[in-house]
Amino acid sequence: MRNSKSKTRIADVVDEIIKLRESIKKDTERLKLLESITVPEASPEPTEFDYKEAIMELFQAKPNSVETTDSIIDYIRSKYSFEPNREVVVVRIGYLADTAKKLERAKRGYYRLRTKIESPKTQVEGVG
Image 1: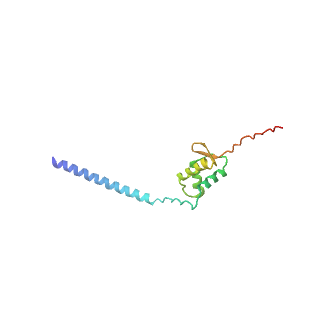
Image 2 (image 1 turned 180 degrees about the vertical axis):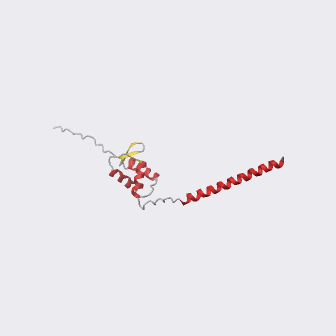
Image 3 (image 1 turned 30 degrees about the vertical axis):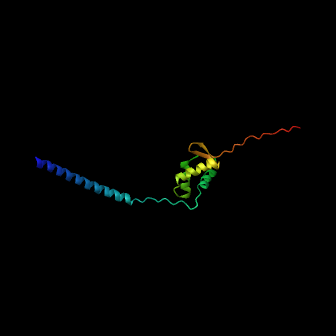
């Protein structure tokens, strides 16, 4: 009986080895296929690129639009042919909205040019 158990174990091991070799062959072919695919490289950021200028350019081209962070990133990507840094874009939008007061938040994550609200002029009546 001992021999039959050891033969079964050996047969199981051999079967597993065969399965692993088939798997390795299949995975090797898949790896070669994946390595043959060319991945387009992202262009580097242009030297002295000004994110604030690019963002304002979008809003000046479309003054009545409401834009999301993603649409601003897409605009920069398509216009300047490089992958903009999302964190930098978010910080620059925040600066333009909070500090420079050139943009305003329509709602969370949505931005537009600051609307100019002029208070009505009050006339001072002279005492005469």
